[in-house]
Image (tube, rainbow, N blue to C red; front, side, top):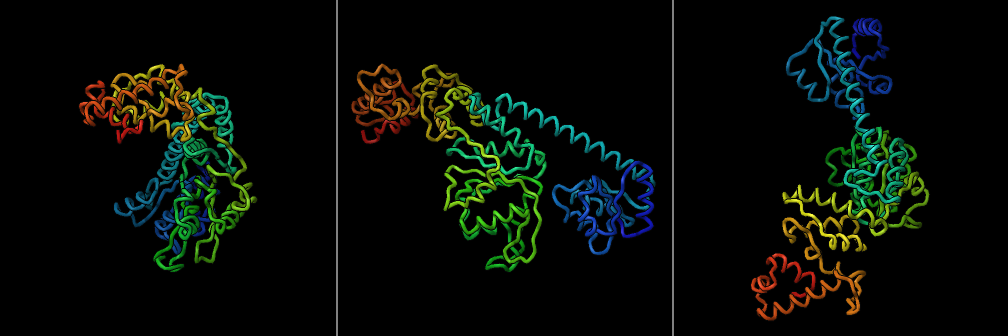
Length: 442
């Protein structure tokens, strides 16, 4: 784009001869309305109505790359243009070969980036189909393999996705995977927990506001829908969205526009919605028409107790990450400890399993994670008291441990350091077991 008609005509001749199709504009405002028609933008610095630097600031996040031009070029101007996101800078007067070479280099860069993106995307999808970790989501259970298969297919499209499942099952991990595997993966990823923001602030957070719209609105604010333009907006705990905002959200999803609080005009947004909830989205608390709008693809994440065969895989995966983060040597897991982990019901799902393993790493010997490093309550399946007729080694071991610890504390008059030495436990391990067995007052 250039405000000089003769130069626009010259550039058009040069580029058409080089094999390019050209869309010519006289200023930045006009160019903003035609960005969807081009792959590269040539932009002058000095123009009426909207200059080149203002154009760089106003273009959306997913706009094509920009090469700047100016007859008044300085190093400072070029650096400022690059800082605002320009790919390159060409000074006027320029030679035809210089312009064409710059565009060819930019095309090559974009093609290489697209190929890298395509290969990364294909590798990620192959991983999902084979049940390999998806940003920490691990499993080979049939329900998980089917879940990842449908998610991989849904990622190719812009349909809204609703993820439901108990707390700790990995809803946000899968939402991020949807974005990462989608054509929007280079666009913004914006997440909001609808339950974490006070109701009076949530409308402004989602839809934005104009300066002066309410007390404290000292400047214009772009809401999360505008911030996510060209990418994905993740609405976590959407079931907590106030009913007063559900109608406005429904209209935004239907029309593809938002109106800021205090604003008079509509702002177009191109956003893919992924929502999640641990609760039931039932009427009258949640609008039925909004449910069908956000649940075009509905994915139910199974709780950990329904895929116990995945627990050894998860334990291996989680321990690798925890040991790296905590800078601890990786212990092996005894067969009895693994059986105990696999047999637990895990009401807190994967998040609870990770917490238990982190605690166990602090208690266990450096080279072995055994039953003694796990919380005592895990040894009692489904919280059933230990029967003298039970042949369960973990249950009987836990009962014996509790008795021995109580006796050691009695013999040493509550001196925990002395009791730990008598029990041949570390002081820290004894403190954990006292807490787990409820022996603080023993």
